[in-house]
Image (cartoon, rainbow, N blue to C red; front, side, top):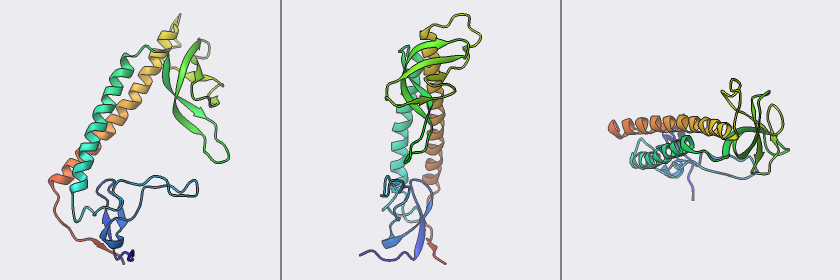
Length: 194
């Protein structure tokens, strides 16, 4: 039987302060968007940072692998000449889902020099909406006299690689933060509820 929390503690994974029913972190990092719990932080149900740093060490290992995998993906994207690319496209929302930009797998099928846009066919079979339906903006193409589909695809591969590189940089920052946390860790008192 769960007991009511009398203290709060810091999550070893995400660093947020949470309630501690039964001395373990309460569920957090979830959404109830669909009317039920979906997703949860890996620190949920674990000991708080004030008591242990074992999960911090695990997070460093996980983030190190994720960082290496992301850098591998950056290299593959920069080298790829495939016409199936990831493009940041605006997807219209529906009654139960908010629209917005998302990375979507598309095939480059043409190039519109006047609008500086790559004509794409969404592999996900969703309606692609951007500046114009069926278009993905492609940087640094306006100045070219002739643009091959391979040039357009390469530009989109590089754009996605830049996005992945930014993610890799964020992960590296997380690893550095968690590493410092382990280096200076010592038991501390929990935060009492007021």
